[in-house]
Length: 86
Image (cartoon, rainbow, N blue to C red):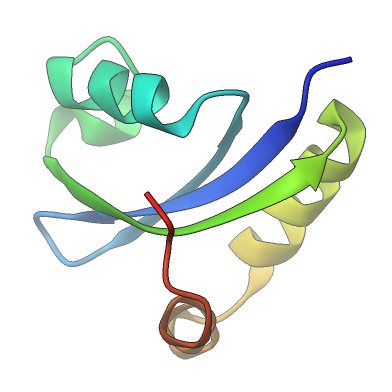
């Protein structure tokens, strides 16, 4: 079974994008090349600021939803407390 990850990307407009994948580096490259989410059409992904390993697809989706519901301040605090290993 594949290990899924939840990740947060800092964007050029200072927004934070949250997603899930089995390979954060590959997914970041896809976003950077324009092959990723539509969210990046008006902004560039700058860097991965947070990642969380050890999920199934289902648990990663639930965690992504939890993070997306957080305030920006809570997301920033999460990224500062748990810097991405990427």
